[in-house]
Length: 346
Ligand code: TXA
Ligand code: MG
Image 1 (tube, helix red, strand yellow):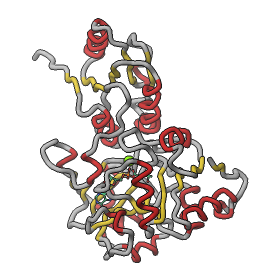
Image 2 (image 1 turned 90 degrees about the horizontal axis):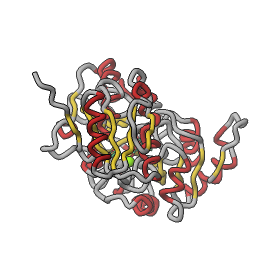
Image 3 (image 1 turned 180 degrees about the horizontal axis):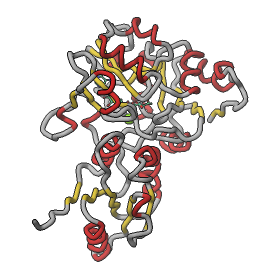
Image 4 (image 1 turned 60 degrees about the vertical axis):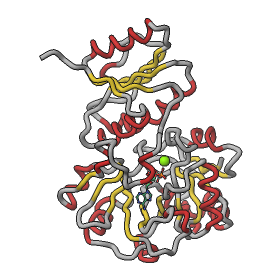
């Protein structure tokens, strides 16, 4: 685990960044912080590095990687064309938690795109990530630095826990800020389509490009997602997670029923409802009035339960506007679609 000097102005010359950059140039993989979650980076031009990424994570090989760049001008090397809606989104939200899918030029290692004709690219908004990309002078393919299926890592310790023994290098930049991954948008069509909700909201996209589409697979289970990663089970804590959509009395009832059947109950609760229910373990997520606090603590909270002995976890649901869309997408996946809805008498 490498630490980065806090006083150095020119991060690119930080000794830890230099060591990590050299390892990347040698085809090794390096975990590093971004503003969303920690990524496991490798040279996007190297088959060896890409193979190592998939191997370390235990990631299915049909799930393509996001390419991280630090300079917009490099984009032309890897994509066929930059449509005007994509250009506008880049100007508005890069660097930032927005990944743009464009037509691939075929210059990157084939594992990066998993054989698709498109490539996903983003410019992260984190000084360490940007310094590392610049120091290595390489496009970095980087999935989240967790074991496949686990919640994404928001601290270097999460990465260490998942990947120790399979990678040599983690740059510790402290906890990440946003807490959920980047929004993935497909910009190869006439309109922009959201493939994965994330740190840049639908509302923010529409401010810049007008109405955007949402991949139908995000709404129903009946269609195959366009973003291959969205079809896999994800973010799962070790005990089953159940979402509870209803009144506090309904939530209370679900806890009591589980307790009555001898289960040890964990609850994932908002700031507003903390201390309201009796459970074996309560983890407070954040405030419903400021969903960025919920996003920031989401994965850490799911990991806390991993270490606790509970048999079932109940979570509240959150309003699906703004960041709530990404939060609910991740919670639904973590719950494997298990949602209890209160049916109120009319
Ligand atoms: O915030 C993030 O995006 C983080 C940090 C490290 O940058 N990265 C991340 O990567 O979340 P990963 O690999 O965990 O998720 C990448 C998602 C997957 O759902 C994948 O299927 C999708 O992006 N994706 C990658 N290339 C694609 C493409 N060409 N077309 C459609 N979806 C693509
Ligand atoms: Mg991931």
